[in-house]
Length: 133
Image 1 (cartoon, rainbow, N blue to C red):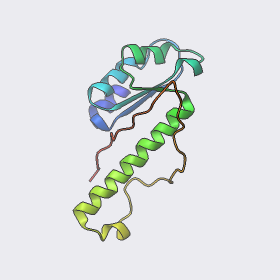
Image 2: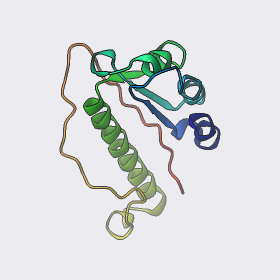
Image 3: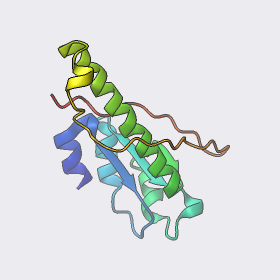
Image 4: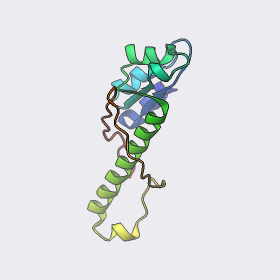
């Protein structure tokens, strides 16, 4: 599934691999990584079964390795960043009037949750979504 997503959406793709047996998902994670998308996986400490995340890290080039709760926060931050970038681009194309008259294409509730800092992991959030217009 990740491989198809990478082919269709390219650098706008995000793969998230969670706890599981065997090594499913590493090829798809590698495909997402190769096309410039964001690759994330669950860390060993929080996994019941570390086979799939381990394979994603070792072979699939997982860039972000965190506990599930922090993965969710990281995804939230990526979506906020993409939404803000798209709004800025729309304003540039349509002028300042777009700020009040044009709804955002990515509509989602604003999150006031900040990413907590943890010594064992740092998060580098980069824009992986392109404007859809």
